[in-house]
Amino acid sequence: MKSIIYILLLFAANLNAQTASKEQIISGLPEIEITEGINLHIISPEPIQYVDLSTENLTGDLPTSSIARIKITNEQNSELKEKKVKPIAFFNGDKIGIITVVGQSFIAQYKAIYKNSESLNTVTNIHIQPEAMQPVEFDKMIFSNLELRKFAMDIIQKKSENNPIRVEKDFNLSLQLNNVYVISDYIFLDMTFKNNSNLSYDIEALKFSIEDKKIYKATNNQSIEMTPLFQLNPQKHFKKNFRNIYVFKKFTYPNSKVLMIRLIEEQLSGRTIEMKVNYSDILKADTF
Image (cartoon, rainbow, N blue to C red; front, side):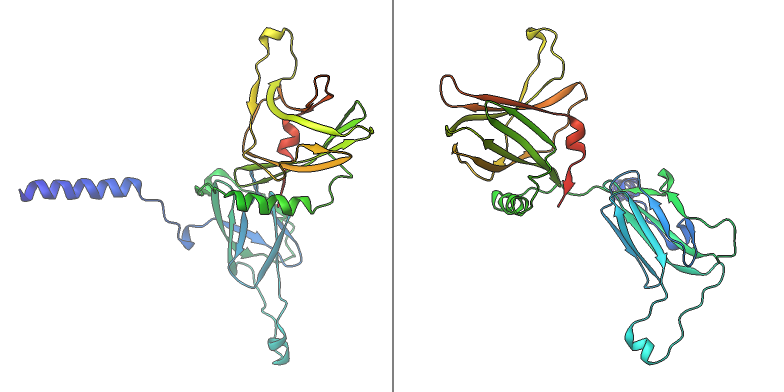
């Protein structure tokens, strides 16, 4: 009996060793050199979620979603200035701090090492390499309709109607895609409908579907209907202008297809207007 228990304990220990995540220690971190007065740009292969700098000797920002800009700072707070404490002087090879960059699927950490400005080989940018990445998996967020409404209201307060991504006009109607936003696994379409005629417009349906960009035969067209998870305003009638937010779970489609948006009037001889949205427009979505 004891031998069986011993074997089971060994099996459990081996299983834990195989499934445990690899720990990272400071001595094993890759080094990157940084020089005072020169910005170091860390380029990520995917959007950066956040950057952590372990000491006040470093400061930085995110000029774009995939670039972290880091520099050495010797700025002191008012308390230290009053005490006339001299700024820290760095020498070649000094360890300044730890830089942590977290992407959508990885975490990368580096030891920042000081290098003086007299060197002709000053590093100004680095690309995060696969060997420096440790995979991470974030929980997918699920938002309630109340939270989706709050996000949609935040969007509706933005003045983005003057520079729409796409506009289609027909029958004295205008259908425009103001902007595309993304948060977690949700896509928000900000849309405005304009009626330049004297006849009010009764909406029978606003349909979203993924369709072939080029249709050679009607029988070959594959249409996949998309249903919004949430819309800010259920309004079915408008006289002049109507703006609304439509929320979808994250979706993708190839370049050979488009997102087709159809606004259909309720009457028998109703006015219908269509818009084709390329996947590149979705990829350029803003975050908020």
